[in-house]
Length: 175
Image (cartoon, rainbow, N blue to C red; front, side, top):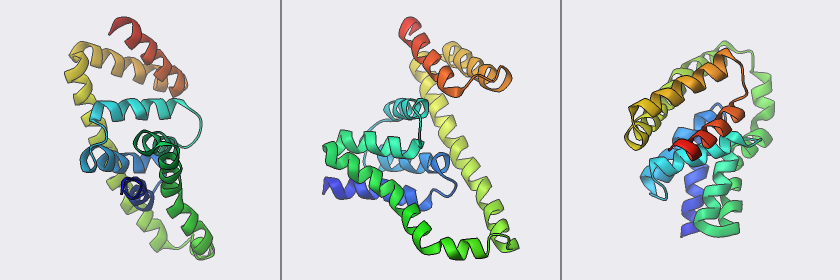
């Protein structure tokens, strides 16, 4: 039963996560934190930060880690397979059709209509992470880390992985 839950927890976001890893992160969070309660928001945000700092697709790294935590090596395999299976199936069976209609105005409109939904999902997840951070480390630390991260990533153009590592080091020394 546990392996079936791991499969569903990552297969559903794999199907609905139109737009790749960033779009499926809120869906994975819903399954892992709310539905199955394998983690709380703080633990999930730590897994997300770690997955973000490593090379490769975010969703597969999270599926492997969470699957391993819940079901060992087989759980990790099932989690990774479940998150990539929808894309694999679509690529194999629908690639020809998608390629044929890629310039269709209807397909382009569909993409444009999905983008705001993904933005809302990411915004809600960011709000929950911000609120959890605020209650965990305080307003000053949260604002300092948020503004510092923004400035380093957007203004100074430092790679996000280095900013995440810097936040780990800062948290280790000062929090």
